[in-house]
Each structure stands twice: as structure tokens, then as C-alpha cells.
Length: 162
Length: 158
Image 1: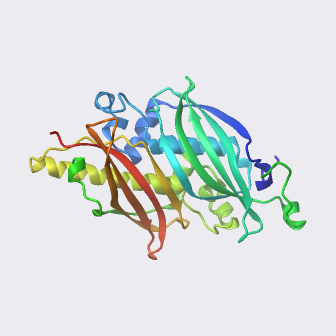
Image 2 (image 1 turned 180 degrees about the vertical axis):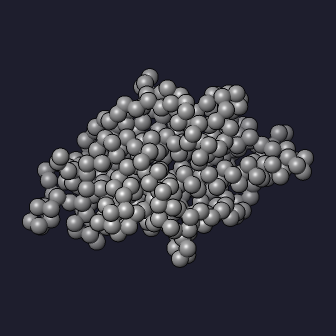
């Protein structure tokens, strides 16, 4: 299996991963464990809220997105982890039986001066449902190891990586 | 929750304390963030972390549990005093989430929250938005986690 290094994330490139179906059971189970608000656990209560019906916790949506990120590409990368997330917007409710696709856009890629063997990538991740609505937008940063040969040779940047 | 008009910038609450066990770190990671340094002690020992660390989404979701539990307790107390309780949520999102230090298995994180802004919502005269800075601090007193949450709340009926 080939491993993705920092050099493999080309600024401007777009890729899609998934799909993944969200079940009623997991919406309620995540909420019971981490976000026990009735709007994420009880259909009748949820109908009377701004969500208008049972919907996943936003943190569940983020966690599902993370799983799709790992399954989609990060699991076979030299990921070092993430220092944080600039912004998350939950634009539409995620309902039971929604089928989500993850769209990844590479916004920025730069080497780290403090750790020459690592590079930083800024991503925009969008989760899109089965009707084409974007339900979540997230911008975050992840660190990746640099391709060992590139580090050894002084770390020139690949073509296309702005 | 209280109504928008009754929420004061600068209000601080201690949310709670949680010790992250290796089992729950691995259980969360197996479901939502199956990277080797969240899943397996041996692989984590070989990584730059040096030991098993919690997924950042696990650290954050645990903070959310404390925020929600605090609010439910507050609402219960308000009801028992006969005070009107405004509806709270959902959230339109958050910003400035920082995973500042790893959360290792066995670490004890103290979570806190401070109101930093309240504002009216032009499109919804019955609603307001409340922003809070939420933090997690480990047993050595190091800030390990912070983010700025936003949540819709009811305005006080005229």
C-alpha cells in the first residue's frame, strides 16, 4: 500500500469519499453518550424545535466526517494529527438514513520551518447529502510527514503545490 | 437555558472533570477516528505522541456532554424555582477549535466555559445567539483544548 505524504496534497485539488449512510440507531446512541439533548434523541420533541425533526448531534456529524476522512485517505497517510479546526458550520440537519459524501478541497500546503520532516495542509471538508445539499462545511489543518526522499534531498516542493 | 436578555458576558462555569481511560479512547477511535495513535498502545508508542492519545473529537464530544449536562441541570433548577425556561439550540457551528496538547490515556481534564458574546438574530426576532469559550485543562494545569461555541437561545417574550 502506498502511503500519502505531505507532497501528495496538491493545492486546489478536489476529491470525494464515501458514501456513508447514517442510521437512526447511531444518531440516538451518539446523543445518549455525548449530546443528550431531546432534539437528538426523541422524534416528537425534535419536531417542535428549529431542527423540525430528529437530527444528528453536530459533533456526531463531525465525528462521522472524521471517520470518512480516515477511511477515505488519512488512514493510509503519514498523518501526524491536527492542531485544530478553524471553523465548522452545520448548514442543514443530518437525518436518519441520510447518505453522506465527503468532498475534500486542499486550500493550502506548506512545509513547517520548525519541523522540516513535517508539512502542514489546510483542507476544506464538505459533507453533502443524497439530495446534493451541503450539510456541513469545515476548515481545518492537518500535519503530515514529508516523503523521506524529499527531506533527504533538501525538500524541494513538487510541481503544482503552491 | 436562560433567555438571551438574562445571559451576561463574562459568566463562567466549571463544567466537570473527566479522566480518559485507554478503553474509552480506543472505543471512540474504533468508531470515529481509527488512526493508530488513537487505537493501539504499541503503535502509539512508536508515533511522535509516544503513547496512546484521545481523538480530538473525543476530547470535544466529552466537553459537549458536560455543557449539555450543565444546561439540563440549570434548567431543572430554574423549573423548580418556577422560572420560565427558554428553548436552547441547535447550534449553527463553532470556530477556533484548538487541540493544544495531546490528551493521553489516564489524563484528567477539567472543562470550563465562559460567555464571551451575546447577540440578536436579525432573521429570527424570537432568537438570539450566545457564544462561549470552552476550555479543557489537564492535571498539570496545561490548557489542552479550547473552542468557541455558538448556540441559538430564545429571547424573553415581550
